[in-house]
Image 1 (spheres, rainbow, N blue to C red):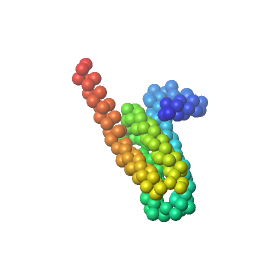
Image 2: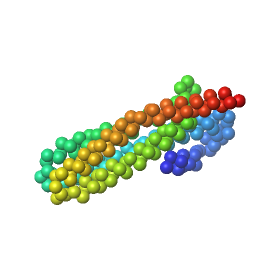
Image 3: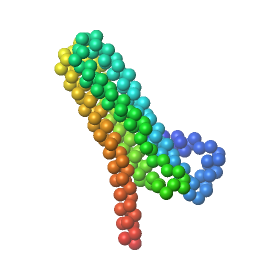
Image 4: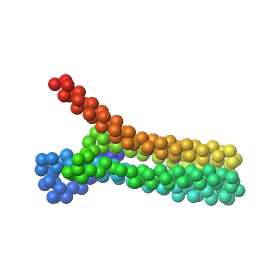
Length: 189
């Protein structure tokens, strides 16, 4: 998915950017900038998809009220708050921006690690969607079925939130691996 977005961004360069593309050093800078933008776009897509699921949770909430299962509303509200928090956290996360002459550079390996991490997160949205799909089919079912599905949703959202908390570690891990590769090249020569 991120490769596809990168290709679209590269194809969308204007004539001036294509001329600059030949300037020494600019190509690498522009590629990093495109990777950052791709990372941001992927995170915005994930956040949007989570918010789409929130709209579906409102329908589930209405089903609970209509079915008189008010005791489950607190848990469903908790799931809703977790979903919103996660969507906002993903949408507003740092995306590796560093100005051209900034001392702190985000290396390609780190940006690639971010892309892999965000793609895995994108896959986790499918799991949340499947749980909400199940919730939408439970009208008229026993309260226990509802409670199990709501707990599964809360667990999935907690797991995604925890995994997203490790995003920085993915960058650091890529940076460490990149540094180790550089050291290995120097010592083997």
